[in-house]
Image 1 (cartoon, rainbow, N blue to C red):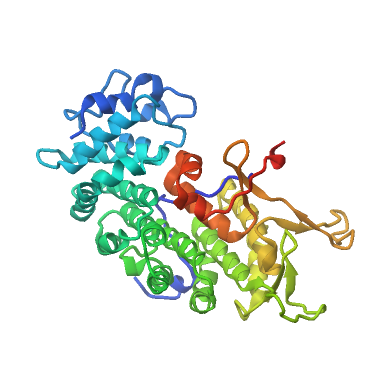
Image 2 (image 1 turned 120 degrees about the vertical axis):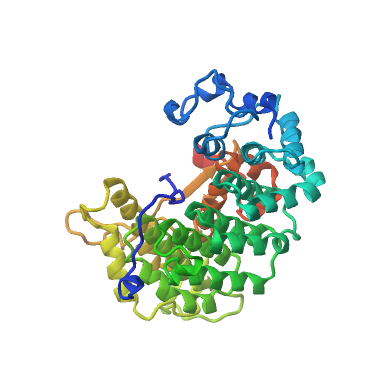
Length: 455
């Protein structure tokens, strides 16, 4: 399976064609050191040791100031799994520290929140944390709202996101929407704006919203994209625009009839294909593919469709689909743009980014051409003549995620791939553990009870 894209939080600018045309101008040292002991920090695949303190340094104690590196290592380490014999006792310790803010330091709160988030990411903790939510949620919101430090707010946003996925409650969205929108608009730190966008999308998807509220959020994220981040006071910041594109796509998977949202969004997404940032281009392209896919729905029982109907297609499993509406008036021009991105040789783009553009836009282009066929297919082509052969038969490569010996998730549709990508971003190494035990995760990604594809 190809590497799925990670969130772009680098510096740099995204300048689309539209933009260029404008003249705009306190944690206990015992619990904390257990998670970060020398034996675990030296595991294979960990971050560069030069980013850490020495093995003898208990840098998570109350007496030691937290560094951005230590927070990042805790939140973003995809290799780590919390030790089996320690996680429950330490989770209770961290919850107590989060709930009791009196006398705590900014650094201590940041580390308690980060360690709490790490455990909730890698373990299914619903029964343990839901009894403390009347204390935990207000404390997280306060850390986000006050923005005493970038580290504390970043850890609180992550803690909030994984908590929402774990609880699967219909009552959280209303409690957090205003503070998250405030952070998106007014935070002085660009990475926090992007993180708040992801937390808001997670809250909307898992925290209880009506379809009307989802549609309002689609419009909210679209405004950020259309203004190149300006509406979030982050003009031409690629991480903010990318986050808004990704969360628009995630929420769009929950809308049955996407026609109205498509009409409002397609021009903005096509415009972002001209961005100078690869992550923005790919996120926009994936949303375009999703919109083309959702313009086709299954043929209903008793519905009469001519065998010669040119807008009828079959999915990978043979289900008959038919186009219900046009996504874009200039599909031929769009196909030309997608083809260029799929084959770009621009040496001003980093080699890794060019490779990512090639693989992603080959799939996006194929979907725009044949919307019912999913993210990975190609027509069999003679490499010498460039002509199709064997009746132009289709060749499918199904993306799969193995959960355990008997369960796999087949990412054969763009809506599944979008959901998986967003969940993996939030849960990191804990995704498979949550899929196994958390109904909120397994419910939104259909799975197959078979292991034949893994032999």
